[in-house]
Length: 179
Image (cartoon, rainbow, N blue to C red; front, side, top):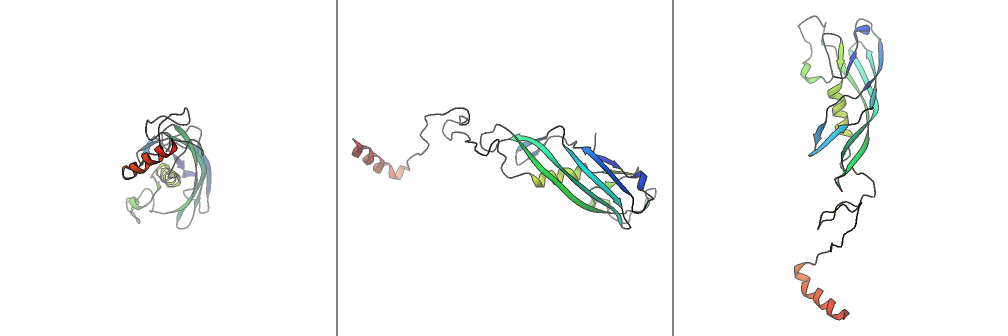
């Protein structure tokens, strides 16, 4: 399934408008080594206007993603806003093989069948909106750097402040002074 908007009804209507809400249908993808999965139920609202120069598209919505927490590697959900507007130049009559614009430069594209495929553009906007660090909770404690246990679920007795080997003699002196 793809994310397509039919503009057939306004193809010959200058100033025509189409509004639709589409479910976000994007397969899982990897970003910075982390698999991102779009949660079911995410939708984006689109408005398409037929202008003298071509088409004007706006999209807006919130997309829920499931990924791994940057600190504890547990499952985390993040909601990213998707908001964009783009002008799509008219490439000429859809039944004509002549192109006035290089179609490889235009995302999204209008097909000769009168559909606007917005899947690539929505994916691009999602990727641009994903925060650098995804956390399961703002207070996530992460993993123990020594034993690797999830500190949100349990505690450990590991010494997390290793002594610099150059200062080991001072550490021994400190321990003897305590006695």
